[in-house]
Image (tube, rainbow, N blue to C red):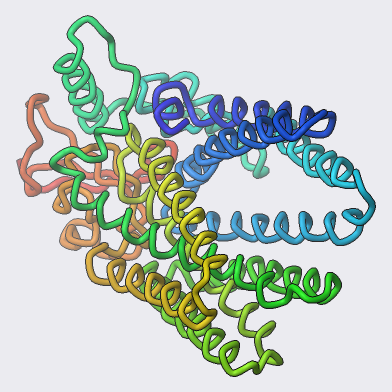
Length: 444
């Protein structure tokens, strides 16, 4: 789905995935045997991979100053969905065959999501990257209208960055297959020489945080398996933490992605280790509260990674990168489930889960750069001298304002980027590339 989203659009990929989930969910309700049910559930799992482009769309449709807050607020609804699923099971999963009703309710929720998605436009940034300027203009106007704003007439123009991006993508495709026209990024591109180290670091972060998250999710039912009422209450309380901590993260994330990630990861690892020690000593009274805090902090860390990942990749690789990391996360979920339900003691399980969480947090803090306030890049060659606007303080005095805008490179020589002292600079909106004010360029 990631490659498809890069080549055919975020919106179309999301619609196809939701159609697949809805159809497979409906077939699950009427399934006649374990084989058919398992096949339908596998199709739902496959379709879930197509939800990644929705995160990419949200990232590309948000301004640099509010991207972190917007994407973490999106995570609140992930927590609400978890609570709703637990509530369905708590209320209706009692009599034999009642699972069909639960499956029907979950499928209905997906259908409502599909209907809502139909009314959203395509990502303007993706349309710009493909050279569809008229469609990008209409998409921007639709997004503005939904927010109650009326845009004055404007014209989108292509800068050198987009030309170089498409040229490099086309050249890469021709080198692999001279007879095939390129239609977008590929999974292999995120492991290219320029992106390899960044990708491996983010994979390590995703693996460790996902083991921590799914380990925390699975450990709660194992600890409270004696009574259904206590079990469901503990799971519901644990799920409620996701929305609570996602909201708290949205308040602070624009002050620094890495700062929030370190706080969340360190706190989650501490909670998980404490759960292990208390469970080993049979002191279960504080476990629901610790599970609440631990799962909430793990969800916050995962939400921050969902924000950071698109910010570290250009437009033509953003979908593939998101899908790769999502696959890493789901693989980690399988590993976490086997770990939790293995013959190891609770203390040993929590030690492994806590160590994975702490390690991923350490890697993130040490090797990933801060991306708060950064304008999304559209070039594989992500030179900091080009994209880090804070370094151009001699041209734009207010660094905070500079961090919210793009440098627009205007060169008479279209074949190469000109030096920083020879560029003409304008302030441009993050989505529309429409100039808000001109700034006099230095001599030359």
